[in-house]
Image (cartoon, rainbow, N blue to C red):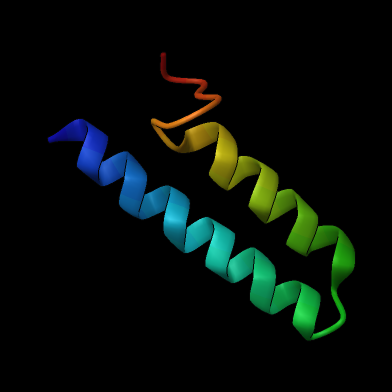
Length: 48
């Protein structure tokens, strides 16, 4: 259950980051994408 929740949160963060980059806010877009990758259960994860 927690894995699904983390996946959804990570996907939302990455999508928001892409929208930020498209709107011209490159720094916040990159930050959101990196945080999304760190939160997600696949690949790198700060939650183990």
